[in-house]
Image (tube, rainbow, N blue to C red; front, side, top):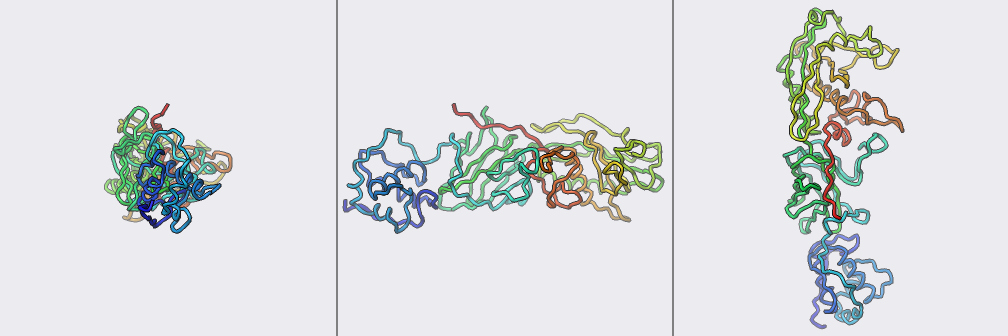
Length: 457
């Protein structure tokens, strides 16, 4: 067979190799040229999969005498020299195929990917630089089974996508290799569908950018990406917009002791809370339903210069004078969002809370009664200046206490709902300035039901 062309490959092909699409196709073509005409040919699709792996191993066993094939074709090594040797055709005769259908080497989309033996595609991060994202491998501070009562999947990246919106992730993809989306429920149109054929997400790849559009609410929709023998799993949670109704009371708890937050400043606080923290992190939005001034005459008592909260001693607790003004109501939610309690925010000049029974009250920026949705906060005003950023952060932090509930774990015991995230970059860190919500916190702030992909029976 003197007409056998010589091939050269730039990178290794095969098990745990780079597997550039052009190199894989060269190897597949050369194997087909050397193969006995009676045997089943490979589909020359440039994708290294089980068929190509089996054929490389069979070639190494019968032509090179490998007792344990390594399933690799390396530049300049024995296997590629044998592939370029016309005498290999005669040596390879006499190894019949087992009857099986001729299928491409592309992974079967209904079979789960086993990523243990595959190198990982690097994750460079979301293009919008917003929250609602965990990279892979997960950083040490990602809340896992040892820190929360709800275990999280740690074998892939994770992203929150608002329903009806699109987010993009930059990945370490090669421009000259085909990218495969290998997930249950994945169609050729790039849409991942649920068991009842409902469109969940739409996926497309442009260069190094993976674009994910949220079509309908879902939780932890598995997305497996394969390129050149490398793999990455991404969990996608599509979140509907969850509206939290808010009533605000500007409290005058004594003569000359009135909240100094103006209506325009309150609007600025809500704009910061929604646009910089809640919507980017978990697609939650505070919606102002009304605000009013609450005088000490309406309260029926002078509360003094400092409003005291004390759940351990009802006689000294001054929150009880504000509770009669709490408003509750039923407000419609957008499609797919869970109902939520109304938040009643009482803004005061100064406040202290008794954190532990028998202890003296301590100065705090705010506090939330998660059962009733009643929140009391300091106005953070000095003279004519109001710290709107601090108010927005505290409001989101206290809202988190109401919505997240008991997920934090110390050792093997679940601590109280008012406990805090132990990491300093977290929104739920006590006294911190971070805005980050972690995966389990986002799922608690804006829960969505899990919609499994189609089952293949």
